[in-house]
Amino acid sequence: MDTVLFLDGIKVTILTQYYCEIQTLVNQALNDMAQQHRMGKLVNSPVSNNHYLVRWITKSLKQHTFSRVVNDDLIRWQKAGRSKGTAAALPILFQRISSLYQSHFVCEKEITDKQIEAFLDQLESLDWEVSTSEPITGQGKVQLFTERPDSVALCATQCESCFDGEVLVEPMSWFVRGNHRQFISLAWKAGLLVHKKTDYKSSVKYHGEYWIFPQNKGEFLAEIPDDFSVDS
View 1 (spheres, rainbow, N blue to C red):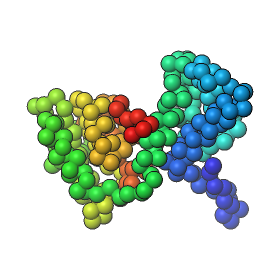
View 2: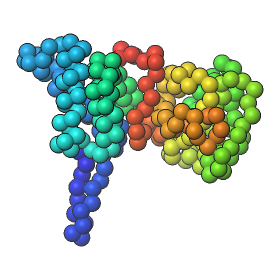
View 3: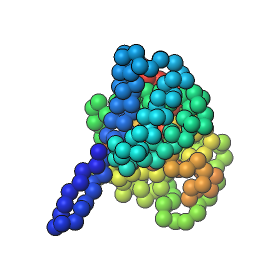
């Protein structure tokens, strides 16, 4: 929950950090559902579980159980659960989110420039075109001419300004074209959680934009790789 303080008689709300609140949310949902199973009050079936989680989400929204930083997620999942039914796969999604975040925050690690350089080298070895030499952010619409179907571009300015020494200290934009799924999977295996801002309508023509945050502590939900499992 958010922390509420009164400074000089003025109410000030301090929002809970997203990466903490999203873990609390999905873990509480899964624990509550498991308790209903143990008590024999809920049949452990896809239909019953989906219906339970939709009601659980709706109640959480009405009662403001969690910080506002996760409201967009709750509303999106509520709509998906109602419109898609079991196809929304909310229990599986919650399990994957819980496992993904737990695996990255059991030990908090800094993201370093060497780690990012190694990831870029891996992409190049897989025939990705990598660009880090041009300023991008704050330049308006930019078009990069690439010869390969898969490409990733980093802003030359951010390659300097987002680091304090070797450590990433500011969110960094990654502009991606081509095989987004492979990019997300390889980033995860390199210890990087990527957070999608847009599929393709970014400041770089034909490229989507992702952010990588210091210590992977993103301000919105990270992308889950297709090949990620709860046992990963």
